[in-house]
Length: 360
Image (tube, rainbow, N blue to C red):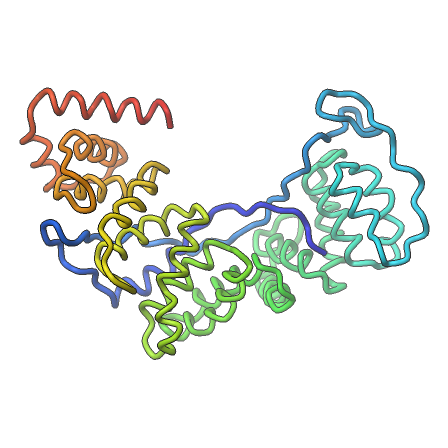
């Protein structure tokens, strides 16, 4: 049963670390290339975070209230469920959480995995009721036993963490794999991460690739980034896949993944996966820098210093260097540049950096 969700950002450090050992970007050349790989990403897992519909939240556990606090009428009594329309889930989508709970509970008690998952979602998020992870875990477990992909994914996370259930990695892996095979996009990505972690080198990447590809097709930016890196850097893959590496990186970048935006800038400037395009590379780098990516801020300073994709601008270069230096990223060459500009330019750069921090 699909559950409305937004996904938390997670990096792919395990993949980049494996690939970085084999791949070297072009050496820095004035007015031509940008070096330094993006920060090597970590083995982390994605978790669904359901986004409640707007105009909801009962304040006293009775009835349903709109955003201004006015009580809304309850839905009319449910017609007998025929399978054509899931009125419990419809009530959930509209923000009638207590109604959704009431209508799902009888079906859940009769063993309906979709209804069990819906109850678990309401309890785990405290939607219209007090948050109750213990009972949520119980219903996720029942729904997982019944084969619901969303529940199997959520229950696998609980089993990995030992959260209100006994920690059991083997069982967690089993449910994560089943959820992935059942088409849950987050499970597909996470099972790919598990395969990479448990199988060092290219073997793990190749085992994980089909799952990353499925998750990427469903719009998971982290998976799109993983697919791009694997297509570009793992040998013995079909040429038609290698030719799609930059396209997948662009899709992850357009989804707002700042690490992908950084790497997209590097790929365009260095000519990785296609022709060089300094202007577009600069644009992607600046976008990632404005989103707070420290490595992108450092590289953007180099672009301004060397007039790559943009006109030279010592104040902007110094501003981005100051921001990345404050975040702990040292760079001797940029420090030399900064100390070599005029005092008034240094002052202007510091003021610009301070303004950026206030706004962001």
